[in-house]
Amino acid sequence: MTSRFTGKTVLVTGGGTGIGRAIALAFAREGARVVVAGRRAEPLKETVALVEAAGGEAAAITADVTRAAEVRALVEAAVDRFGSLDVAVNNVGLLAAPAKIADIDEEDWDRTMATNLKGIWLSMKYEIGHMREHGGGAVVNVASNLGAHVRLPGLGAYVTSKAAVTALTRNAALDHIGDGVRINTVSPGPVDTPMSSRPGESAAEKAGRMRDTVPVGRAGATGEIAAAVLHLASDEAGYTVGADLVLDGGVSA
Image (cartoon, rainbow, N blue to C red):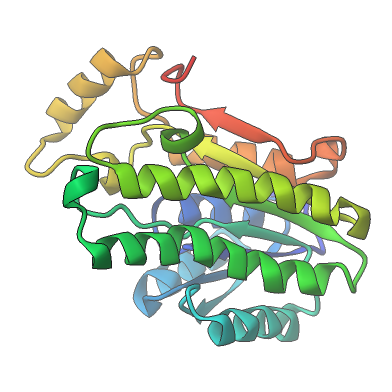
């Protein structure tokens, strides 16, 4: 355990699995009190158990980030539980079924935008609302290299939503740096999580595909994304405002 975030409260949405869980564990290892949020209670409880097993302190709160009342209640509950909100990491994301633009189902489009874009906006709305009244803080949004940096046929809804997150983050960063709130984005490329796997693909097949398509020769590790998030949230990054840190092994180089 180190002390970079000792005494700080960190909220991680989408904290039940994958990148979100790795981020929650990384903050806890550095002394933070962590609140993990998402729609499903069981994965959140598993993350809390892992944090506590490592000697950290955490709480799980179920919330749907597409619903304003639930997001507002989430922020209030995090503050009530630990007394502050110093860092927020907005990590919830949805990858819709692949489809060409003319073939995207309207419900899939709306669901993707509601989760990936509206969910980030609502989360920032209430997180920043608290932070600016209580001395400031740091927000890190998780976007994707698929958006502002790389496009893929058949993923128009996802790519559009993530590109919009990058733009939203930059505007929010300018809007609120005067309030003492630093806001930045990380944009991961292929990461070793279920989302980066194809249906029916074996682990060996996935590894081979990553060797062929990612210049560094592999998928990223969730811990590598978490390390970048912690840097952006820390005092070390005090001069970093509105940045988009791309972590994709060279795919967008």
